[in-house]
Image (cartoon, rainbow, N blue to C red):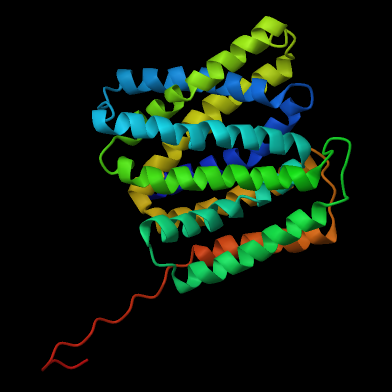
Length: 306
């Protein structure tokens, strides 16, 4: 099997695992505080990433980039995790998985505002369709709360806030990724976030909440740390290097699809008309955004036929 095919399969597996992680996180949050689970996940993942960096002898992050990346970590790791875990506790796992389209929307906006990157026609259409889908999902959730999703409207807004933080982190971090090893940079930003998460974990240890954590919630945190915070990123980075970002967009479609199916079939999430319409628009937006633009014909040089 070709290396590019294996890389693509790896990216699909990563997106499937990411999609199912919404249900895993939601299940753990039923009997545990959001901040505790977020802190536990990072306190497991960050040291392991540093260990992987050291054992594989990857180059350290450039000295001049370390402090800026610490600041970026507070947004891309700390703030995004706070918003994600709090939001998913309040909403349905299927809602949060479909709202992944927010990352596409915010990334395009930040890239345009901060880097002046041109928004292509397909991306613009995808943004409009995706925004419509997100609005329908969010507004349609209002008043349709369940016992496990006590405030879907607020939860969905918080999930979007998480995706905005992640998108800002992605756009700002791109410049640092050009001159730093991807795993080394990932290890650095995760370990930097422990300045927040270690005190949080210590607090829950002092109050006895950590000791009362159920085996299922502990297992979910270990799974999230090992699989979604480490394995999936390895698969994704290797895939992007092998097949490029355009092909990677196709794999991204599996994330909301799997997340919605798992949420409905496993978690028992209700199906409403707005959920169906919003979901279709979200999938369509991701599909449209992933379609490569037709290359413009080169301008003819004087004396040559066009």
